[in-house]
Image 1 (cartoon, rainbow, N blue to C red):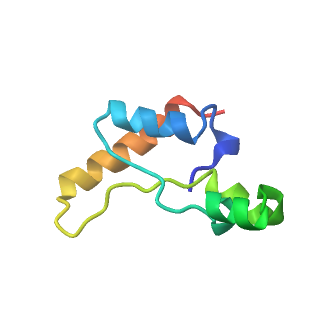
Image 2 (image 1 turned 45 degrees about the vertical axis):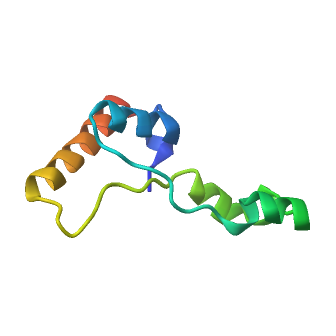
Length: 89
């Protein structure tokens, strides 16, 4: 969960910075009320669930899998720390 209040970039830019370091990431979770079906079918809006909407904007999924080597883990951690340091408020 990104602390966007402490960064000068948003989630998309953070993901791009990871990609430039050849580290894949994504956003795997979307609040139900923000799925197009529910917005169309029930007219749900972001303000209907403000906490979920706010938190969703901060979430990214970093690489993590059973066979991940210690060096790979260290590279992800180093990249996250570097991006945060570079874009700190």
